[in-house]
Amino acid sequence: MKTNNSSILLWILLAPAVIWLSMLIIFPHLEMLFLSLQTRAGPQEYHFSLKQYQTFIDEPLYWHTFLRTALMSLSATVITLILTFPVAWYIAKIAAGRSKLFLMTVVVLPFWVSEMVRTLGWMILLRSNGVIPQLLYWLGLTDHPVDLLYSDGTVMLGLVYSSLLFMLIPLVNALETLDSSLVEAAYDLGGSRLNILRQILIPHAAPGIAAGCIMVFMLTLGNYLTPVLLGGKNSMWFTEQIYTQFITRFNWEQGAALAFILLGLSSCFVWLELKLSGQSFDEVMRRS
Image 1 (tube, one colour):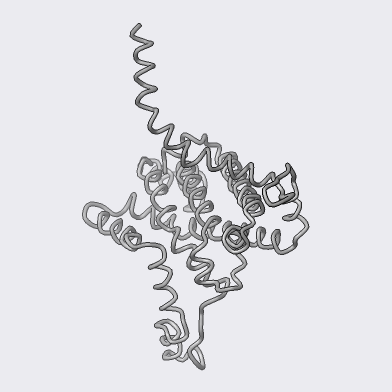
Image 2 (cartoon, helix red, strand yellow):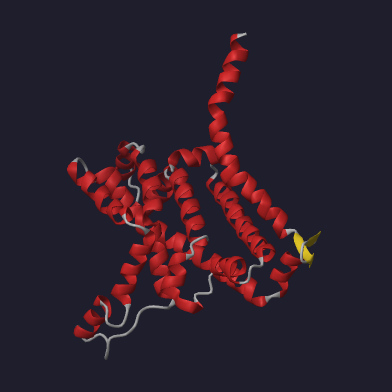
């Protein structure tokens, strides 16, 4: 009897969370799936069809933008990992006390404001009469103030900047659990820095690396604001295509199909990252 009462109590406690997740995630995704598998045969008439997915294959603009978005998101993930790993090591193993707290505050502080404000800040810095072009001109590195906006490099800068925190925190959490005596023993036995990094640090931080890469890739892949503002009208970002189908063309069926294709890519990346790191999904999420 106690077991049954405990099960009932557990389900009662879980019910609000299950209902919340169902309303916000499961039901909307099911509705999007049904929309993507429909085609209009009349004003209020729909038929089951794979036409929306066929349109993605037949239209070069769609799959070209899709591949471009995937490659740039992957590049942003790799760059973010390379930039944050040394910082995470310093915070986790070298900094102590107030210096560690100060460094974490410096990292988190920019994220106290919205993504739009941070992106607009980069636009102010990079436009032709902004701080950075004027500084380059004053140093004699350019003949005139150059507008640094609306390029792939600018978009990549914005994506990496907006993702740093989501890679850094899992790495710090993973590296903090590493026994420093292992690294010291490896040095005493003649191990090089490269071997220690490859055989000790990376394997130990694998769950943190996987968690950070998954979060950064999914955030950059689904990012809309940063590519559009920093890349301009020719940003060629896949979420912009989805937005256009839903909001501009009112073609919800095509927009739903494109959204599910993007969801499929992010799901494949999560599976591949877990496979390469040899981690389970639960273990990775505990590190994030």
